[in-house]
Length: 90
Image 1 (cartoon, rainbow, N blue to C red):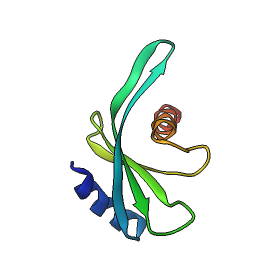
Image 2: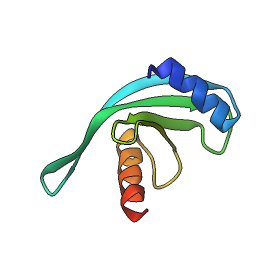
Image 3: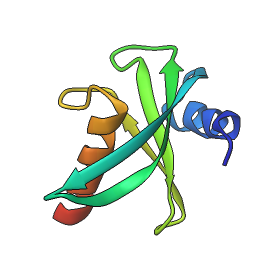
């Protein structure tokens, strides 16, 4: 899925305009092993309280993952971490 297609989905999901900002490569390691590696797209939302949304496709679930920038999520890396943790609590 392209970042521009993702922006349309996020805009619909969040109910506000959404603009692609950048692409970030993320590698998440745990105890010396890579547990997640991929590309995270960063989007600007045109509304508070969260003006940033991180998005990527989970290849295992074949689904779009979106995480809003709200504490403790402050970056693409912490968005991935929060997603991994939520999957294991789940």
